[in-house]
Length: 60
Image 1 (cartoon, rainbow, N blue to C red):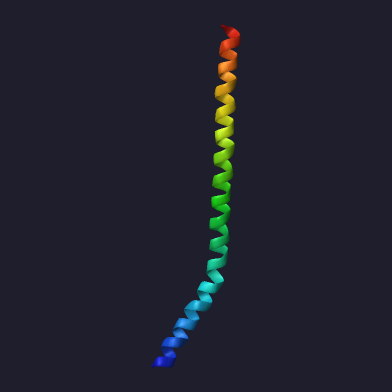
Image 2: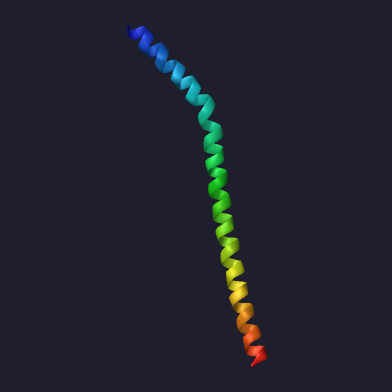
């Protein structure tokens, strides 16, 4: 009985070893993309607000 339990555990461990790395890689890629997008968005918003203020002061 003990041997079958260990065999089943080893089987699941093998499956998880095959499935988890791509999921982990995908998660890291998504996180990195989100962080970069956050900085790009913040910079774009800053430039847009700065630009509109500049235009508003220029048109006054």
